[in-house]
Each structure stands twice: as structure tokens, then as C-alpha cells.
Image (cartoon, rainbow, N blue to C red; front, side, top):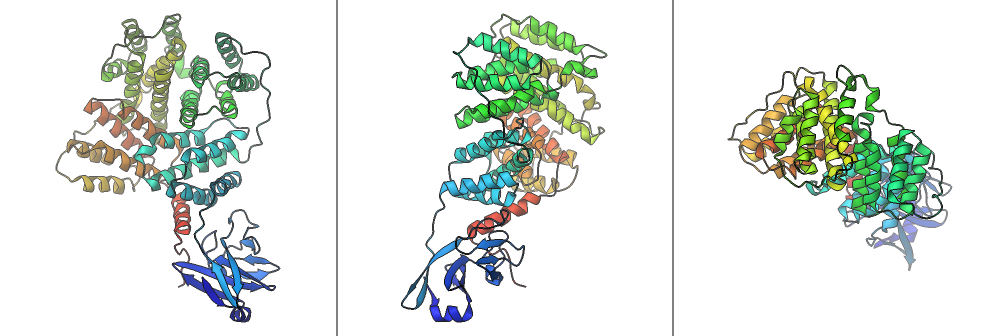
Length: 565
């Protein structure tokens, strides 16, 4: 593009150009010509109004400083400026403004830099390029996860969040996917960026031990809470070439000896393994990040409610011990609601023995665990309006754990792992008082249009604690026979427009999982009501990330952010 004469630029020192929707700031400084995108990469303020001194261009809004030779910033929060090549031909200045597709390595570098320094605008800009250009999302996930587990952290809420988003991405549009990843990676960054690098560790030397021996080691080290030894053993299992399925079996047999940390240990680890399966690789550092979930977790026998007035631990140990040496190979189906009704009884021993009897009768373990997860969802759907709002997190923990152990049982169905289903069932029993009196799920009334109901749902979620009102809208939607997919997408949008915590995304993802398996319309309604009611209990938030995402998108599209009065 022909810009101006060299003499004119020398005289004026700076000239603003427009071409094809782009605005270019042209500078003459210390005998050289420089051309930049006029928008500061930080917040879009016009660089033409910046200050130049000693080869540094400073934006006058937030004082971001840029090396004029390279466009690189001295201030990491600002990102590098877009710089164009310039030529002088016969006294005329020409600017090369051809579209240049950024190399993926540059985008991934921006992503990693944003995570390392907690600069969410950089993360948002990287994600915007990745999502809107259709880049390989798996590569972005691996970059983020590799950085996350390279820090000396335990796999936490950030890992759970991004794994859940990966699981439900088929229900998400570009904007929802971007917002979900941005929020998840914000949590990842907060959890890891101030922690030191993970120390190196050597694999256990010698040949590959028998699998049963390795499992016994993992169980023993969990019992004695030896986190360092667990890290080395888990990393060694990857080095020895054990498959992901075998590592899962060993891990979850150890993790279900106790009900650990209110269900978080199994739930978090399940998300890590699901993500590893999706990405198609086993990262030793990811496995090492799971060791604290076993070694540092609280145990249910240490909690009063599990011991008094009824010793639930003893009941679980007694019933699960009957399964040792038994192959859980039954394939007889059962209606999930039948199992749920058994779990919702008021007698914990009856609940546990009924589950054992189902197994003895050849019932499929995965059908039993699905029914237990449905029972946990019923607790959420019938959560009493008279409860403390903080008790929502309790039924959420029960539901997310029940879903997690169900997903694990579908992949690893050994007697030791199945003990976790007893944990889930009796945790649902402990939550019984939160359904006193039970919220009565509305039948719903047909007549309203789909579009109006979905809009009403989003509008209602803009107000605090509209829990029962949201239930009625969902019931009306289902009473009309409208497609559930549109409802799930709307609920997903409602969650991901917020600065949601990982618990809310757990609720959304667990509900989506179970909807893919449940067939009875009333069971599916229960799941959707449970999802909507929990989401309403946590909405709205301040939505700070939304503004960051919008800035990144405008910068990506070349739109103006700063406007003159």
C-alpha cells in the first residue's frame, strides 16, 4: 500500500492511514520509518497518540511500552504490537499490509505466557485465535495441561473445569467454548502460577513388576499417606508402559478404599483420566499431580456423620467385603429409577444390602451406578427451599461424586472400585434431610413458544435466587415437547456467560453425561430440573471475564475499542 511521501512523513513525524478497515500508525524516528497497527494490543487505545523516546513507543492510556524495532512489549500484560514492513521506493513510503496468519507456535506461546503471569487478556487473545480460526484444540489443551502439571500442584478445580468443557464442547457454540476455556484456564493459572516447578523424579529402576504387585503398592502407599512415594510409583507406571486402563484400575482401587475429601479425590481424578483419554497420551506429571488426592485427602471414617448415630463405614465395609474375589460381570439391565428408589430409603443397611443383592442377581454394575447417580440428582431437584443456600454445595458434591464413580465403573468394574458406589449411595442417604420437605417438581404447562421460554430462562437467571421460577420454566418447556438439546445449550450458555466456579460446571457436565444414558422422560426431566435449579442458585455473577473476552474478540476482528468522544 502506498502510504505517503518520505518528505511528508519527515515533516509531520507521524501519519495516520486507513486502508481496508485497518488503521495504521506511521512514525519517523531517529532516521527510520516504523508502521504499527494503530490499536494498542492491550486495550485498543490509538498508538498514534503515544509518546516516542529513545526507540520506545509508549501508549498514553496504560503506559504500555514497545520496542519500535520489533514491536515487542516491555510490559508482558500488554502483548506485542502488530508491526508492518516498510519500504521506500522513489521517495514514496510503502507499507506491506498483507494478511499474515500467525504461526500456531506464536499463539501457543501467548497462551503459555498468559498462564504463567496470570494475564487473562493474553489467554483470551490466544483462545480467540484458536477457536475462531479452527486451530487444533487438542494442541492447545496439551500446552495448557503440560504447563499446569509442570508446577508442583495437585490436580484441582482448574483441571476439572477444562476437562468438563472438553466433555461437553459438542453443546457449545464458539463463544461459549471460548468463555468456558477462558474461565477454566483462569482457575488453572490461579492454582499453579505461584507454585514452584515440579521437582524431577526418577522412575523406579529394574524391570516391569507384576500388575497385582503394583496395585498392592499403590494401595499400601495410599494407606500410609506417602505422597512422594505415590508420585514416583505413578510416574513409573507410565514409564513401564502400563496402559491408561491399567493405571486407572490401580488408582481407583486405592481411591475407593475410603470416601476421600467429600468425593473430590475420585471426581478430580476421573476428570484427569477422561482428559488424558481424549488427548490420547499419558503424561507422567499429570499422574504425579494425582498423588496428593490419595495421600492428603480426608477420610470418611474421620467424620462424625459417617460414624454416628449409625456406623455407615462398618456397613459399607461389610457389604463391599462380600464382593472380593467376585467378577462383576453381570449384564442384566435394570430401570435406573428402580435403583434410585432403593437408594432413597431411610434405612442405610437396607440400601447397601439391596445393592449387593442386585449384583448377586447378575445386574449390570454400570446400571446400578447409573441409578445411584439418578438418586443423587433427585436430591438436587427436590432440594427444599427452606434450606440454607450454602447447602446447595453439599448436594452438588454428592451428585458430582455419584456421576464420577458411575463414569469410572463404566471403564473399570472391579469389586474394589465398586465400593465407591456404596459410598455414593450412603452419601445420598446422609443428604435426606435436605429434602425435608421436598420441593415438588412442577408438571409444567404447554402453550408458550420455545423461543420465549428460552429467553425467559436466561432473563430469570439474571436475577438472584430465582430457583423455583427457573424450575417452572424448564417444566413448561418440557411440557411443550420441545427439543431438550436447545434447553441444554441454553443452560450451557447461562453457565458460561458467568464467572462460574468449577462446581457449577461439574453440575452442568454431570447432567449432560446422564442425559446421554437415561431414557425415561421423567428421569430426564429430573436431571434437567436439577441442573437448572443448581445453576439458578449460583447466578448471576459479576461477569468480569466477559469484558476481557469481548476486548480480545474486537482486537482479533480489527474492530475499534477506543472511540473519540
